[in-house]
Image (cartoon, rainbow, N blue to C red; front, side):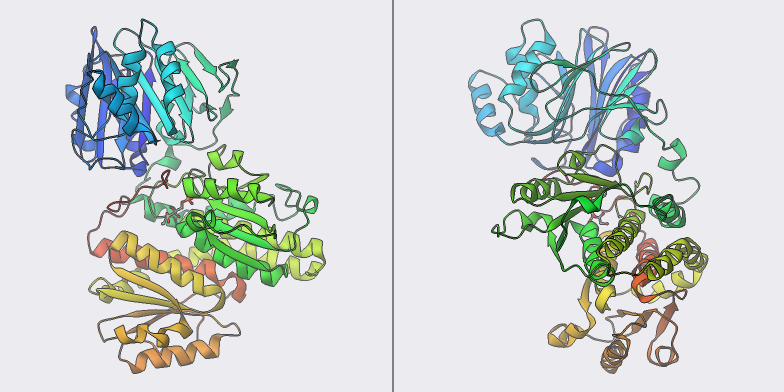
Length: 594
Ligand code: F6R
């Protein structure tokens, strides 16, 4: 949801900012803009569309500036609504990520005072309010302005007479990159990796002044504070495509490594969190989108391995449900750790007296400050907008947690736990075998790319995988897809089945397999093409129009393998349709608005 980059130092600011923005394009790509300090003035360029629309050759070589890539909230994508914004006298340029809740009332007051606005955005009010409060000291003007602003923001600004960046964060991410004779600010670490791996994460309420040699930070009480410098262990290559045509494909292929890294050191003892501290007799999983599907899979894993009853809630709904007396242990999933709905749900769960644990992929992300415990997925940076390896690693964490809980509760024997752990160790190799078959999977997608509607059906632990397969196809191929429990189709959706409506059936040899065969037979009888993904079986070879059999595994681990096949199906279907796979229309990677 919008990406911000700022630079001050000895390099060409325009170049640093534009290359940084390219690394943040996954956060939004409705428009892009840059402002650099020029000789006694501010040079501004902003355009509707992607960062490539900016003409780098026109940006004067100067040593401080800010840039922005936008995901539109207030005001449609257009040149006018693109950031940065200037004040009336064009002394100050500002970029913003977040939402200013009270912008209408501020704007009315500023209009009365004669300020002229050039956009429909909420963000523009900030720069005019700073102009109003400016009496020679930009930091003071900014601090005063922030007092009047309600909402979420990561803000960066420059003044035409200074090389410093003034930045602040509240509920939107902002990180300072620490260099030598130069410093950076960005919404996310990938924008910094070409220049530095040393970063300071700002906390909510922090305001900072960043010059090329100095970083000063004030906390919400306006006290000068130190924020620890942390070393990032991601490499530039982790944030690049490394020869793959799309980030999504690269990230699908990174899954064996991501699984390996996520189990590394955690199979002998899972000490990220001391679960014994908590009295866990029920669990609720809360998340959005793909992360919520991990929660649905988690429900089956926890109920099976740890015999703990579970519920699953979508974050944006949970906070509006009526509180009850129950206080289930609450596990929130968020790849980015910045999804506003999930952060709000974490606060609400705590308010209701629940102990909370966040599973996230991003170190020190906002959600980590809202919960009692944090477990990191170790998937490395995920740039493609569609979540792939992070879903896989979220599910891996669920196995680890459930095994740990099952052992502690005495419902899982040591031998059984070891058996599960051995299978976890074998999973990277099994995923590799699926990836080796990518051409076979690509062939399956030929008929899919011509379809208007596609159904995904599964049972038991593979029902949420059907939901996830449908979501992936929708978001990157723009084909209408719906996931259903296989037994539900005949309660309505059967009316839509025709010979042009393929059904992807997930058939794994668990206790629901025979029922699944029955469902596949019913679908085939309606002449819909059936594609089966699941365990090898003679009956399926007879019934299905096409099939892909996953490497043998215990049914409880099948979601991971089946899902990798569905990721490739979505990818190649979108590829055939020439979609913008890494940046699907209307989407952004981290959704920091409600
Ligand atoms: C789908 C996708 C989204 C995210 C959702 C939650 O491929 O990526 O559905 O899963 O926006 O994001 P996080 O996990 O960052 O909270």
